[in-house]
Amino acid sequence: MATHIIDGAEISDEELALARRYPMVVRWSPEYGVYVAEFPGLPGIGISGSAAAEAAQKGEEVIVAYVTGHLDAGLPLPEPVALERIA
Image (cartoon, rainbow, N blue to C red):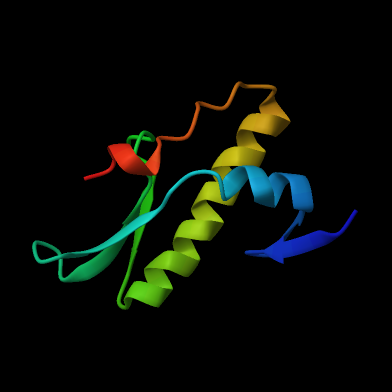
């Protein structure tokens, strides 16, 4: 099994695949003057960056931390929101 390093943490292929099931939306926030990465269906889970690519990279780190934290604590993961439901 391969491992990956994300934000200094070692994660498995399975953990990365689970994290990538959650769609990420990156949008410009004129209110704050930054790009925001959010995860529909996961209220309060998001992060910002000065560029869209930075917000997306940080977003992957956030969702990986969310998933691995839930797994480590033995908590259930919510089902990802279907892309068709994101408008």
